Length: 117
Image (cartoon, rainbow, N blue to C red; front, side, top):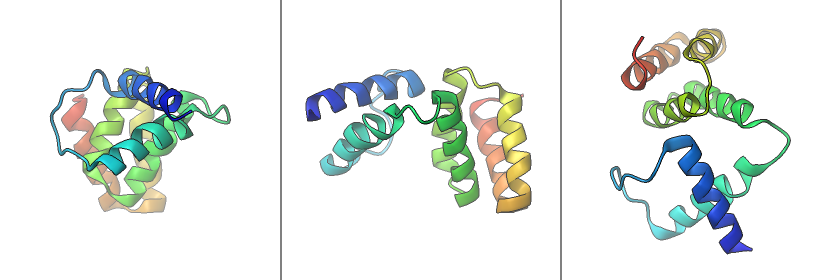
């Protein structure tokens, strides 16, 4: 079962983020396994939301939590699966009213870093 979830997780990560580049901060092995097998091999595989809905929900939560590094990763993933830039801008503008203006301004900077206008 774990091997199947690993393969599904790796495939989902490739769909969202492209082939692994080897760049970035390496994660300890247990965290790599949880991320690949559980998060992307199980949670991101559920049928309750479409891939685009799950991506937008993730981006929205990262905006609310003000996590610019992770926003950059997931904004890139949203772009890679066909979410329009305007939808992300709309989510950022909507989040400003619930999560705060500074969080949305950080999100706009992160979006412009990975997907300039």
